[in-house]
Amino acid sequence: MEVFYHSTRSSDAKVTASQAILKGLSEDGGLFVPDNIPVLDKTLKELAAMDYKQVVYEVMKLYLTDFTEAELKNCIDHAYDEKFDTDVIAPLVEAQDAYYLELFHGATIAFKDMALSILPHLMTTAARKNRIKNEIVILTATSGDTGKAALAGFAGVEGTRIIVFYPKNGVSPIQEKQMVTQKGDNTFVVGIHGNFDDAQTGVKKIFSDKALAEEMDRKGYQFSSANSINIGRLVPQICYYVYAYAKLCAEGKITEGEKINVVVPTGNFGNILAAYYAKNMGLPIAKLICASNENKVLFDFFSTGVYDRNREFVLTSSPSMDILISSNLERLIYRIAGNDAARNKAFMAALSGEGRYEITGEMRSELADFYGNYASEEETAAIIRKIYEDCGYVIDTHTAVASAVYEKYKADTKDTTRTVIASTASPFKFTRSVMNAIDEKYDTMGDFELVDELSRIANVKVPNAIEEIRTAPVVHDTQCDKDEMQAVVRAFLKMD
Ligand SMILES: *Cc1c(COP(=O)(O)O)cnc(C)c1O
Image (tube, rainbow, N blue to C red; front, side, top):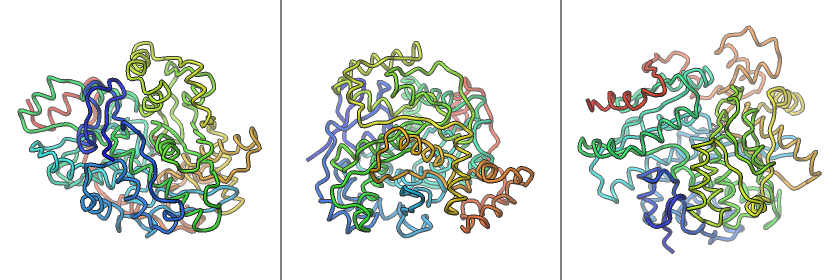
């Protein structure tokens, strides 16, 4: 059955999957959603016998219905290859009383690689299908990990250019070094004087500037997005939840049909939304546990029904979750508003106007599948130390937020359902915070000394992504104010 997509802010215009991927964001500022969430057409038993790439195909074919089987399989083969340091792509590791789904074995050692290693292939295939002549300019705001993963994915890809905006003082030293050392003539990296929300808002503004879009078209360019608002990011993220469930079945850890909980460390609400879609496709998921850091706007939303971004922005040790405007929540709001675009649009207008909105009691009752909580900086550090001391397993700061919230969930509910924790980054990406959590004595060591020490105590080889940047020269040093973003884009594209 063919699936079409429409905006969360108006349901009249329908586009195909490939068109939704090319556009990224709808012209009215809304996010593309499928007219219906498809249902898995393979049994859990069949899925349990598949490898990662096969599962990806079974999920993606249901959403990207205007791609041929050959096109999809070609994209999948080019994405999940030796760029990953393990054949299984997404290993499940049992530690304490949970299964850690390690989503960080790709080129840039964060979970963003799971989708961004395939997005460039989906995008160039979509451009071919739709006979696009323009060069595609990927415009991306990053809280630290999307930027590098998107750069790695699009660097050198013919017919594309990529521009990444990151908060100059809001990412880890290793995240910044990874981005500013990116090679490739078609790449451009800019540090903005502002936070992630400023970067994301600036990018959305550039996207919705119609005059600019027309001028771009005359010069042979068009924008697209590699942010998690792109349906080409969301769909590949659904796949690993299905895969994790299938693997637990295959290994006899759960019986077929047994429900599991999923804990996701959340920022822009993309990763957990993918789990919600997986559940709606028929995957037996009980609770979706949404874990926030001290920027706990989502915890407050789940506890009160009020989304309120009017608060202080906190810089934490889990910078990729330092976000107050969780863009992908819009897809959930749309759904619990009864798939009503006009109602959703009113909430989003209130968010951009007053910075807050309140959902109705009826809508709140649709959120029963979700549990939200948050972890303080101290709780995050404490759980890293505890898991290391108890079982020698070292988790990164983002994953630790999820682990800490899972502890709170168990204390609150006494629920013993088997649980998968999305492990979103390698500890090597946030070495300093991780090592300081384990022992204060590490405070005086240099960044790369710490990397070697982490490798020693965790008994894990230093990932290639880190080896590469030890000596790599900085090639991007542009900075700008948040109101100069459009000017910077024009300059890079030589439009003036
Ligand atoms: C992006 C990111 C997150 C948050 O994911 P969302 O999809 O934005 O909710 C969590 N952890 C890490 C390491 C990330 O890079």
